[in-house]
Amino acid sequence: MSDTSESTDDAGEAPDEGDDAATAVDAEEVRHVADLARVRLADDEVDEFAAQFGDILEYFEALDEVPETEREEELVNVMRPDEVEAGLSQEAALANAEETEDGFFVGPKVS
Amino acid sequence: MAADINAFVTEETIEGDADADGPLADATVAVKDNISTEGIRTTCGSEMLADYVPPYSATVVDRLTDAGATVVGKTNMDEFGMGTTTETSAFGPTRNPADTDRVPGGSSGGSAAAVAAGEADVALGSDTGGSVRCPAAFCGVVGIKPTYGLVSRYGLIAYANSLEQIGPIAGTVEEAAAALDVIAGADPNDGTTRDLADVEGADPDASYAAAADGDVAGLTVGVPAELFDGADERVVETVEAAIADLEAQGAETTEISLPSVEHAVQAYYVIAMAEASSNLARFDGVRYGHRSDADGNWNESFAETREEGFGAEVKRRILLGTYALSAGYHDKYYEKAQDARAWVRQDFEDAFESVDVIASPTMPVLPFELGESLDNPLRMYLADANTTPVNLANLPAISVPAGEADGLPVGLQLVGPKFGEETIVRAASAVEER
Image 1 (cartoon, rainbow over the protein chains, first blue to last red):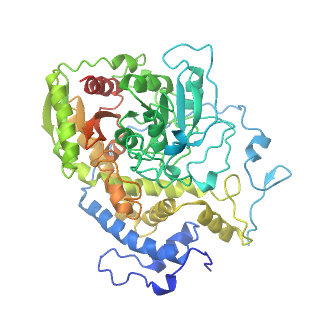
Image 2: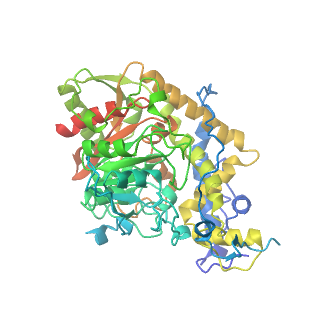
Image 3: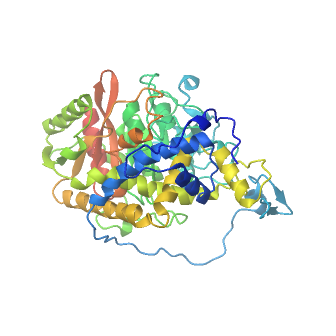
C-alpha cells in the first residue's frame, strides 16, 4: 500500500519488539490508529512512531498517580437570539476549494 | 535581517485606520500565521494550508487595525502550533535574533523573533501550552498569555480550543499591555469570551497599560519549588536574582507548593492531542487546503491528502490523540488528564488565597541549538513543564526578560489569578525597571 519514496531501509528495520517497556506500541497498532485518523503513513514513519509512542505513552503512565478530583467548574451555556445575519457568500465559501461544480464542493468518490 | 532569521511566512500589509489615535496608532504589528487575515494567505506553518486565503479576518486583527496598527506580515510558527522551537514549520525554521544558531522558541517563534529583531513593534501569538511565553523568553522580549475568555479566538485556526488564547508580544511590558487593551473584550462571534462587567472582581474599564507602573510595594510573590526543580542552574540563578530585586522594591516573597504541576505536562499533552485529533479532522482536502491527486475512494483520498499535507509532529499528535480517545484507552488517559487538570486548577486557586502572583522561570532551559531537539519529541514536550500548568488552569501569565545567562535571554514567568492581568503587568514592569 505504501509507495512513498522516502522509505529507504524499512525492510531491514523490524518493529521494536525487543523493547521491554510495558507500554510498547507495535507497528500494527500504529497502523490501526493511523487508519482511524485517516492518515496514511510510510513504512519508515510507522517504525519511527512505534518507538516514539512507546516512550511518550510510558511517560503518560504517570497520570495513574493522579487522584480522582472533583471537577467543579461554573460553566453556563451561552445562547444568542436565532436571527438571520449576513454570512459568507457562496462564492467566498467555495473560493478555497480544489474542485467545485455548480456552486457545490466536489469530494472524492465514496466507494 | 528578516530574510536571515525567517520570521515571516508572508510579508503583506493591512493598513491601520489612519484616523485612529491611542498607543497603537502608527504601530506595526506582525501576526502569527494561524490567525486569519482576509485576503492574505494564512498557512499555520503547514503545507496543508500553503495556499489558503481566508475570506474574513480574525476579531483581533480587526481590533488592531481599527486602533491604527498596520499589519506588516504573517509570522512563522511550528506547524499548527505544535512545537516548542518553530522548527516544525513547513517553511523552514526561524532563527533566534539573540543567537542565530539557536531556536527562537515556539510555537510563536516568528512573532517573538520579529519583535526582537525590530521588524515589528508588536506581534500576536497564540498560547496553547506556552507558545507565546516560550518564544518571548528565548528571544528576550515580553509575552502575555491572557486569562481564558479575555481575548476572542474568532478567526484563530484551532489546535486545542479549551486551552488556547491569543496574546501579545512586544519589547516592553507597557507595549504588550497596550496591545492587550486593544484585543481584549467580549466578542459575539466567540461564545467563550467573557464580558468583564459580569466577572466578579474584574474592572471592565481597566487599562492594562496603565498598570505598568512598577509599583510592587506590598505585593506578595509566591515561589513554588516544583517549578524550579530540575531547571538549568544558570536559568535558576538569573530568575532568583530578578525575584530578589522585586523584594528590594518592596515585594514580599513566600515559598509555596503546587504538587499537582508534576503531572501538568502529561495532562496537557493528552488533552491537547485529543482536541487536535478532532480539530484537524476538518482538513480533508474538500473545502480548503491541499488535496492529493490520488484517485482512490473517499477514505483513501483523505488519508493520502493528510499524509502529504501534514508534517511529522502534526501526524504524531493526531495519532496519539486518536489513541488516547479510542475505546479502552479513554478512561486511562483522557479521563485521568481531566482529573489532573482539575487538580492543577484547584492547586492554583488555593495558592492565590495567600499570594498575589506566582513567579518561576518561564522555560527551565536556555534556547536550544537548531536541530537539537527535533529527533526527540518527548524531550521537547518536557521543556513545557512551567508553561502548561497555566493553560490547564485557564490563568493569565506574562514572561518578562529576567536577564541573560551565557549571553542568552532568560525569561521570568509571573502567573496571576483569573482576570488578574493588571497584577501580573504591574509586577512584570517592576522586573524590567531594575
